Length: 481
Ligand code: SAH
Ligand code: SF4
Ligand code: F3S
View 1 (tube, rainbow, N blue to C red):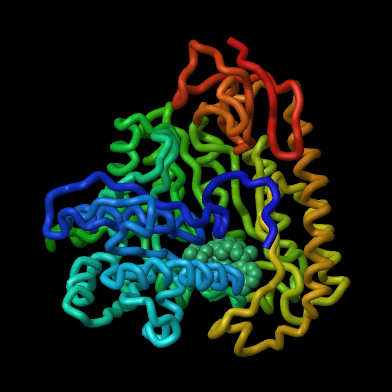
View 2: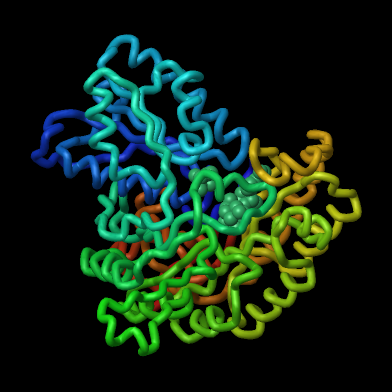
């Protein structure tokens, strides 16, 4: 898998193997040390913060060194085969630590746990506990079971669990950007995708708990929230009326456009981002809401997957090439200066050379700011694995991917060059990776912007930056008053 310009941290496989740190709390596991490492998409990283919160409440503190840990958790991803291979290799590295410390508990969490269930215990002897994404509240009990000498598995999926009441522990944070889960699961059944099987049915989190979490973040100094869901446009929460006598009144349904507005109204100083938008569900109400609020960023991640209607139908994406182009036209019309990024899969079952050309011509049409590009990887149990042969040779998939990447590199550069000479409102996130003489932050359209430190400005503040030049993915400039 190859990622080009990385616009944010909302994407699978971009962030890998980060260890999370907790403050100790008094509890029954007091003094025990937890090491937790996360793979996959932002939702998995967000879940690790929920896991950390649950375990903090039972007394765990964390370590950044798995060799010192009493409990080692790996929160896993199944999206493509190489994501799973990476986790298996990491487990091998934990083996030596467990050999020298036989009391160490090794747990597999997340999507791979859900996909493989108790098979994990047979296949990987060092694993003691397997826990799916909806069962994290059960972790303290499962650890008890392992302490009692047994292996433990809980991979039950839920139709209700949203962890709405759990206040995630923000770990390894810059104190400025945070992820907030607004829904879980996915009902779309794209034929290539394992997520509906690993994350279960779609459910939306109660909106006031989301607004409260974002307000608390703002009050703690955070200045940007990214609302997360596999398909945020299908967010829908129907308030249940507690009083029988008011049942006849309108029961309020909160849509994604309503929710965006509620979060945007917390403060004009709080930036709002969201991911992922589904082309079939992103309607004009959401676009008008983005246009209405300056603090809702002009940036939409709109995965196309393929530019050809026959392939889209085989993928069960439920839109065609024309529908997708019309949605892009609507974005351009309603939000004139909006960045658009995408996901593309090359070499899906039966994809012809002409169909691949249509993906390339879609890229010419949209001129994406960023793209995440992948070769098709067949996943066991998915509709595509059951119905269609994975018949495009690896070298053809790879060559098509190369062509897609080359085109994206071209448009990433074209788009960054368009920003040169303009003033960008940048949220300062900290020093640049290369030098503490420079600040780094992102523009409204999610481009990375680098500029010399100005003592009057601190991380967490906004600055107007005049862009003087650019690389493929970065804008370089200086603060103007
Ligand atoms: N919910 C998001 C995507 C989540 S998965 C959406 O619907 O767009 C992130 C990306 O991984 C997908 O957009 C797709 O491009 C890619 N992906 C998913 N399954 C894949 C597979 N089997 N092989 C290759 N890429 C895949
Ligand atoms: Fe997977 Fe499709 Fe759901 Fe995205 S919308 S998570 S690609 S099934
Ligand atoms: Fe995310 Fe990977 Fe699961 S992309 S939802 S962690 S399969």
